[in-house]
Length: 376
Image (cartoon, rainbow, N blue to C red):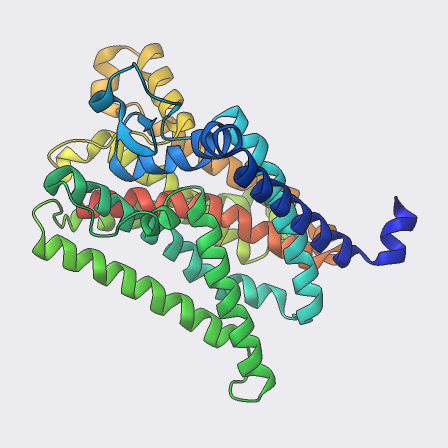
């Protein structure tokens, strides 16, 4: 196998693998539409996106129509799908993610990017943009629930629903990165990181402006300014306390990540605080109801806390606060893992993984914060 890759080149083998897989799936869907498209692609990949877009608990395939399971009943319909992930969908998404990461590594080599740490900070606005963009779909689902019409119709709205939104944001960031490098090498800017950060900031600003416009003009959204204020202040204080504790008691933990460690902790603190506020204290800050956890880990932690602690304690502290502790512990562990040797041996791969780590925390955290901020 190594001889084969060396002979034809790793990039060509990667491209041929991707092309072959796409061809197999596409040809199978054309030749066997019921078995390949309806009972596999639709049921496990597109159906969950359709259900999520409509805020349905279940969507059914009914002779080519995609209808709520409650509407069509349980007889005479094809497969059904629910929002979220299954073992089958994970079996498809994980290899796809691996192939994508390999492709990113090849691309970074081709582009010859330097100043990796600056690239990390320049991509920070895109991580916020991804979470904000997901809230656009939350507002879209709220519009459908209220008016029966979507502001953004399928299939376009599917591009901003998990997991497709990760690919959408990735390709947008990739386009911005290539454009920024072109501007740098043409001498229009003094470094690619400046226009790259500018692209991300502009996209984030436009997305939040759209959500603010919806909140100001539509009945299904409202603006609750205390939500982002409390979450951002809480996350920043949590980060400051954690960072000070590391500096005093274990400074060796952050010799590899350096100032990037602050971003890692803050990103996961935002996710943790947003969950605590949204799940337990949203009504205290003006929302008509507390949010419902969207991810199984959040839900499991909240339910376990409620089961273990006495009811009178939970009424005072809420049940989501252990999630914040878990997120901070995970962030500190990540900082410890990424020591000096990781960045010295493979700086390109280390920065790529660091970006992924921050995105995993900041994307969901930004979404939860903005969902509560705009009441969707």
